[in-house]
Image (tube, rainbow, N blue to C red; front, side, top):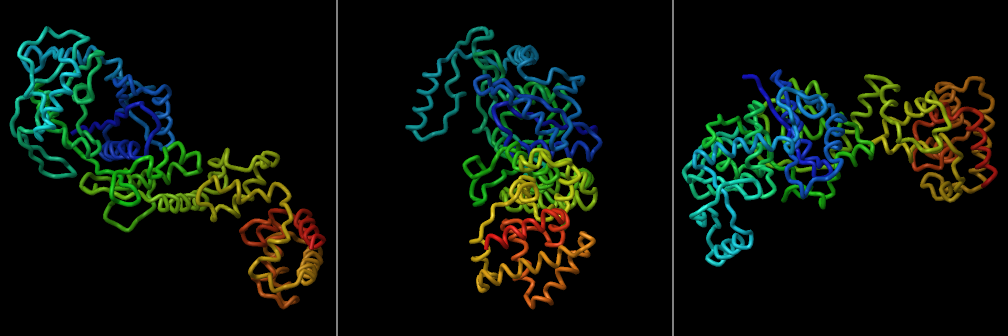
Length: 479
């Protein structure tokens, strides 16, 4: 089989992480099987259409490295890839159903349909429109809704994740195929498009499982082969008791990108949110995922969203990129995340800063807070010194004396590099009879006035001799 998958989002707003996972799995399957993935934009719901949403979809997929083989921008033999441009194709299929007696024009006003629905509610029975099917219908033309004429019966099918499925005739109904505005509904359009584009695997959220019998009826009525169905379980809220929504704190993929989450980490996390290869491995490259992906490892229950795990994974990827590809590779990903004042410094200096701070980062946006003192003089805060848990037993005069001894010791150094600095700091410990937590906390705070900083010898090396000594002297004078 030449595997063909598709990602078919609606341009109705921001890209939720659940939407993106529905792109990741089709991508991985297609590339695992040397097939192709199609990007198709389902934009027939014109009332919910959001200007710029298509570009956001494309930008998000490109950021994650999920290149599509056919679709907008790249083109392909099945163009057009916007459903709004495929109206005549849907109308052609609609006419086939009309000719075979499986579709009819329905001029029934919405108010009347609501009345039927309310009658069923009062009787506490399911509302099925086929029980109210009009006896006489006009000839169909755009401007009149077109409905499928259901033939209620049993259906059986196999879902690659959910297993063997079957249902009775009670779920089959006369669904709308073409709306009053002439555009198709999702229920009709995706079946036509998947058939026209040769899609072999339909991968989508498990919420569509209940509609599958109506889809099967349409495949049958149109004499189209069934694709392979793959239902993806929900991503659950952190509480684990409901589907993840915006109210549960899940941000759009764009927001995570703006907050400094790496695309490698986001891809890694979402791919493993509902799938695993049966090992204890946690860090996966895109190539790893493609090689190992298989449908039989998709779990059939919901996966709970855990932002803490995502941020942990992001920190792991920050370190992985630095350790395997070097400071320059990681630095290339940090544009826009540095403090504004860092613009006054060259790339080499910023890479030096990054090389001693990277292993403390959870996101790239942490750079703004964690590196500011490398680019501007920190505001002296003597309260931070006095209230530090390692220093509060020392008097102000003792702290002043320790700083003066530190300045004297470091001033005499001919080599201002990390090994020489560490040796001098160790000698200071012996000379002052202080514990590392006391002496080093004092020096660290005087240099940075930050909650934490990298190893002291590395901080001194990057700041340079002149700046370091000036800051130590300034704090000594302020005490």
